[in-house]
Image (cartoon, rainbow, N blue to C red; front, side):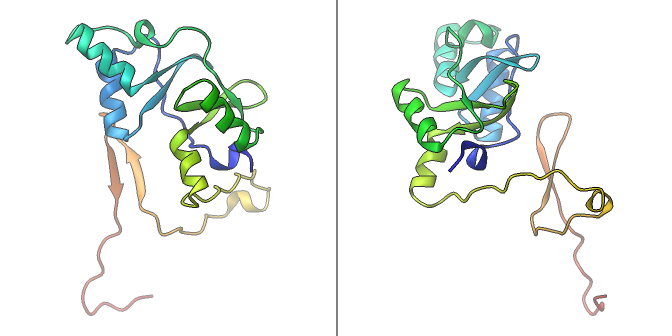
Length: 174
């Protein structure tokens, strides 16, 4: 079982200049506990919810960038091609809750967390199908509906769910 099959993507990230209160708001609104800190396309650090809570206790309402409160040293990362066993070993060995997942070019492509590993072990998380590149024939076709609601991000960062209009009573279906 490869990390790429179970990682979360796309990854929510912040830059080193992002104010820590903004990072905390992002974590709460997305219901996540870890954010990779990126500069360009390079992961330079990680910030966990507990880091932000500690910063709030130490700095109060002061505007402090996450680059000043993130953990020092290069972040522990895992290749997308790695086995889940290796990702779990890294999480335990380094006493961390998440791993940025990198492709062969060292670009961030996903994140895998200890919760993902627990869910896999409990049989609660199914593998996500690998995205295949569309062929020339399939490129112009509309994908089949999956039954999921479309989610759009707004300028304020909040997500809106698009819903199908309700059918009128007595109207015939086509």
